[in-house]
Length: 480
Ligand code: NAD
Image (cartoon, rainbow, N blue to C red; front, side):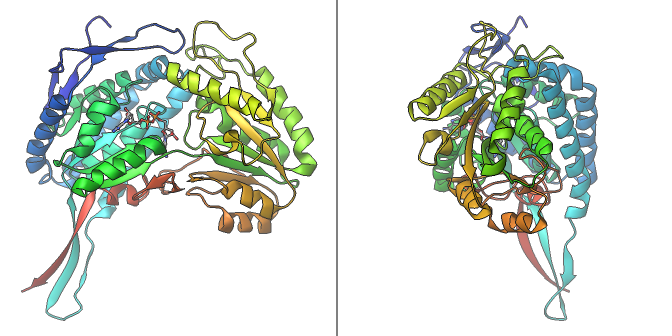
C-alpha cells in the first residue's frame, strides 16, 4: 500500500484536513507498517456529519425495498471479498485466517438476518380505542447515527450496527478503531460499490480520544452505537447525556464458565479452549473465568494444560496456526502486567510463559492460573487476552455467587447433565447471555446480543431490538 488510504465522506475519498497520517502495524512484527491512514480531526468529523445530515433528507424517504436492494448488493460484494477481507483482518488484528473468515461469515449471516427482518418490522397498525379513530405506531429513522467500533471484530461489529441503521433509513458516520483502520476503509469501498447515495455512509479514521469524542459530543448525531471497553462506554454515556443522544453500548465482560461434576468433561474442555483462546482471548464473550466443581478440577486442569501446551502460537496467516498474536503493543503490555500481578497476588500459573514464542511480535501463550480468589485482580478485571482464571467450588449456589461476583454481566455458560441445575443457573445468572452446554462465545442473529450490569446499556444488538434502536416511534391518531 504506497499511498495513505483516505476517508470516505460525501461519496468521495478525501485526505484529512490535518494533512497527517498514522501507521497500521501488523502485530506479528513489531514496528512494521501495513500502510498509512488519515489522522483525522474534529473538522473532518464535522464535514462527515454535515454530509450525513444532507443525505438523510432523501435517504429517509427511500422505500424499505430500495434500501434492501443496496444492502443486498453490499452483502453480495462482502461475500465475494471474503478471502481478501479476511486477510486484511488477520494482517492488522493478528487473529488467525480461519477466525477472520469466520468473522466475515458471521457478518454475512447477521446481515442476511437484518435484511429479511426489516420487512416484518414495519406496519404496526391497529384499531383505535375509539371507534372513529385509527391508530398506529409509525417507525421513523432517528437521523445521523455515529458508529464507533473496537479492533477485536473490526468488520463484524460495524456491520451489526451499520446495516440495521441503514435499513431503517438512517445515515451513518463510522469511526473504525485506530488499530484496525484498514478493514473499516475496505468496508467503505464496498458501500461505495454497492451504489449507496453520497453521504449515506461515511468513514473517518483517527484516534478515539479526538474524533470519537467529537462524534459523541456533536448535536447533529442523534444516536450512537458503540462497542468497546466499559471505561470508554461510561465516558460516552456521560457526554451523550448533554444532548440526550440515544446510546447503545456493548461493553466489557468477565465471563464465567461453570463446570459441574456431572458434565460431559470433553465438551466442557472444548468450550474452555474455544471460548478462552479464540481471537487470542480478545473477545467480549470469551471465557475468562473457569469455575470447576471440586471433584473434577484435577482431571479437567490436567487436560486443559496439556491442550494449551499443544497449541501452535504464531502468524495468523498460516493455516496451521491455532492462535495469533494479541492486537498491539498496549494490549501486550496490559496482558503481561495482568499476568505479573496475578503471580504477585499468589495465583499459580500452570500453563503459559514465553518459552519458544516467535521473538518479533506481540505473542502470548495460552495461559492458565489456578487458585484464583475473588479478591484478586485476575478474578475481577477484564484482561482481554488468552488468560484463564480458574477457581473451585462445592455447590451450584457457590458457583453462581462466584460467577455473579463481578461488575460485568455479558456472557456465561454452564456444563451439566442435570436439567434442574441448568434451570437454576438460567434463573440465577446475572448475564445477558446464558448458555447450557454451549460455550460463552456462541450467538445467533435472531437473539438479543447485549450485557447487563456494567457490560452494556441501551437496547441490545441483533434480534428485533437491533432494528428498534435505530427508530423513533411516532404515535399516530387518525380520524377521517
Ligand atoms: P476501547 O473502548 O478502547 O475503544 C473502542 C472504540 O472507541 C475505538 O474505536 C476507540 O478509538 C474509540 N474511543 C476511544 N476513546 C474514545 C472516546 N473518548 N470517545 C469516543 N470514542 C473513543 O475498546 P477496544 O480496546 O477497542 O476494544 C476492547 C473492548 O471492547 C473490551 O473491553 C471488550 O470487552 C469490548 N467489546 C465488547 C463487545 C460487546 O459486544 N459487548 C464486543 C467487542 C468488544
